[in-house]
Image (cartoon, rainbow, N blue to C red):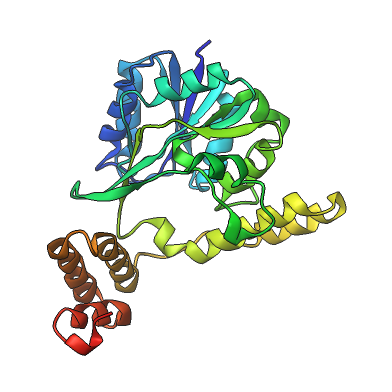
Length: 310
């Protein structure tokens, strides 16, 4: 029985999936299983997963129709055998070699904890450093014990570890939450114990201009707010609120030029004040993708028109 079950959902991630899996196999902590659910990929993701499954008996592949991340994670967690469950995302995300070792060490030293997370490193698809983020000790302590969304301070879903027993005790992921499934789970897990983060960043996130966080932001926020309302409501109201959550489904359709432009603009602002050349590069990409991006246009003009400068 492995000590840790790593669970991951994959959809059309062929270009970077190998890097993600290799980062898991390169962990200094070896007592794990990796359960990967292919969520109906139409590229070669499934073949890549199965090729690794043949090489390493710690890897298990589950083929599924396209139902979204939440249902993929429900399937993976149902098959897990570890004492702990660790999350990981595809899409180019990688774990630093000491990630699991540090997180499990913290859990073993403080068994009263319910969630252990880690600070994050953010990079572009071209491996340009965008910055890092992490929660303070106080934010870890109180960030999930809130009554309104604006006060919420949540760990990154993909970089967190929790106990399988606790997961089952609180009812696991709820399929009504197509997005913000992590917030809904954290708000229940935190009732069983505390949340702490290891001190060193140990998870690397690739920020893509086509990322779902950019396209589905409003849906994510709406579901996170519903999760808070459910936690703070009377039991009699939970059913109605879960029905409302289930009505917020996936963002469909192909990535538009407007979506791409907004993604590039976001990356340009990450570089603003740190690297003018790179900020300008992504502003140019934003306007090339969609010339009607007003925010990008204003930022671009501010470089050359003095009275527009903030």
